[in-house]
Image (cartoon, rainbow, N blue to C red):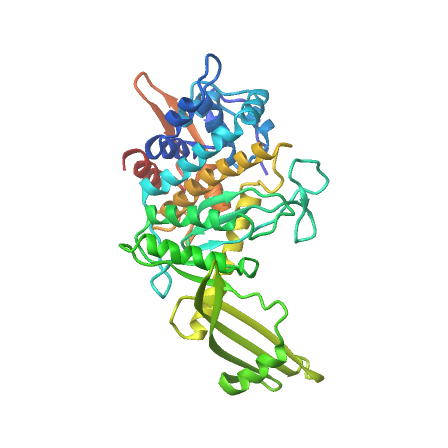
Length: 447
């Protein structure tokens, strides 16, 4: 085996060529720079937009801590790619985000939505023709810290309990609200869902299906959907699918009801399943609602190992829905709601934001807002660069993880070639990502 000679090259080589994609996405498809700088007048120093775009770039590389700003390889390329005039120091980045977090947050969230509205991502509907709108709390473990808002979550750890809202099977994020760990998942949820429905209507005119977990089994959420449909009678109505919380319901009573009204199927010896629907009246603010509830009851008299049970085991589940399709289809549609857990994972692990960097609640809320913008841009880049014929990844998939987008398109090495009139990115002869990178860049810069 030959030994290599180690030396320093005079060429300006960078390992994160994908920042050029992020810079174009922000510059061409949002009003982020102008709106941030206009929000708070600045007499001197680095512009507010430069500070936030620098942090956005770090998040797109999977680095959420403020200290990561000191690891930039080529300041010239970083500034050129992100269209900024100067790079903030770690102290400036932290102080600026601490001081203006509440003012910056709505602008960052709007930029994320503006990007989706302007780019109009392709959304694949469900079998029913709906575009799913999934919302669920995802605890973030920040144990061992004394950050503002950290408290006991329902998962049994100390941390936060933010609630994101995802649009489509692709998982674009419309809302990512930071909440204290001890906050109940239903608190402030109607207002969050109201905003998400309005934002979703700006992105797609296809029918929507709102899916919620059992923690959000509240007539208030159903009332919100009905009011939304009444307010927008000129548009296709929104349907809902919400897991039922049985609370103190008697399983024996429901077994007796299922014996008379349910459709039974024997899956194996000692295990049978019944599915059926009931119309239930619920009251809210003086009004009575008649809502369909799909039910599934499982009775086991023999366990999976063949052991006879002294008393039958009864498992009861239900789902509130405005859909009129068959019960098995409703149950399958809700099972697909579990896909949103993968989107949570991409935020927490791929973008590395589970342990938020600041001790201040407002600053961490801003971090989630910037991460939502980074996530949506990277999601779109992955859907348009890593699924087609030019993709360096050949296995078939409906979507690519954010981590895959980083590996294939963000952390792509290139040489910077400066001329009197332009700046070129020169990729290696064997770069498999070149075609995909070029196609996505042209779509963002010239589309």
